[in-house]
Every structure is written in structure tokens, then in C-alpha cells.
Length: 152
View 1 (cartoon, helix red, strand yellow):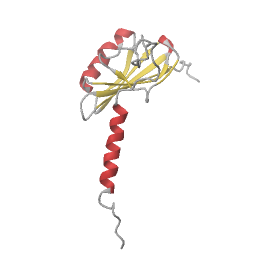
View 2 (cartoon, rainbow, N blue to C red):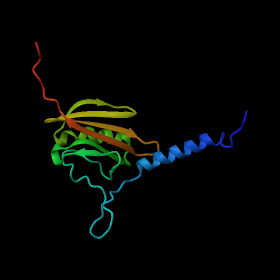
View 3 (cartoon, rainbow, N blue to C red):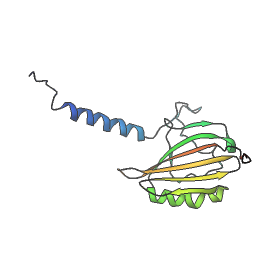
View 4 (spheres, one colour):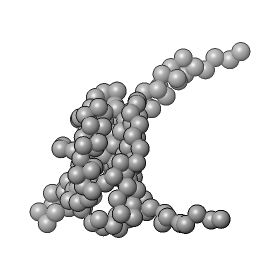
């Protein structure tokens, strides 16, 4: 049977590439737009006035997709933070009602999921801890289906 020169190092090389790709996903993303002075602008959470944003959170532009503006937006807001998953769970559990959201369901675990309703929208907060510290939050807001009278 012929021996391949990378038979032993191939899997190790693939694992190293996978690790580097995973690290790149969590790096702080900055938009390509420049300010008038030519400096890169930091992503801003200013347009999200209807949801709480943890201090020192960073927007992951590669995984964020927003349609609409102000309090009518829908989509996915992906953020990373140095806070632990436990701290973020407590933060959203405490702060979402202060922004007018009503609790629908709460699930605490390795990946915690909190669901809320507000007017004609539903918000789902998914919190996943990072093995290197900190956590990732995927906050999805979608339109709420209008309630229908039960059929007979």
C-alpha cells in the first residue's frame, strides 16, 4: 500500500485550519465604510432602541441581518461579549420586561433560550457560552402571527 506524505499530519492540519476559521468568526468586525476623516467606524447599536444591549457588546456583522429600522425592525442581531452566559441570561431576563417585552418561555442550559412578545413582534434570545470566555447572543425578532378565532 502506497504511503502518502501527509497521512499523519493531514488531520492535524485540518484541525488547525478549523480552529483558525472559528477564531475568525468571533473577531470584532468593522464595517468597510469610512468616516469623513478616513477612520473606520465602529458598528453601532444606536438604532436598536427597543431591546437591551449589554455593555461592551460587539456586533458580529457577518451573522447579523436586519430589515427595517427603529422599533419596527426584524431579523437577527448577533453579538459577542466578555460577559458569561449566566450573566447574560440574568441580564436579558431582567432587562427585556423593562423594554416592554413579556416573557413567553425561558430555557436555561448550555445554550439558553428566552422568548418574549411585544405588540406585533416576537423576540428570541439565544445565549451560548464560549470555551475561551465570554458568550455569544443571537437575538432574533420576527413578526407575530395575528391571532385567529378558533375554527369550529
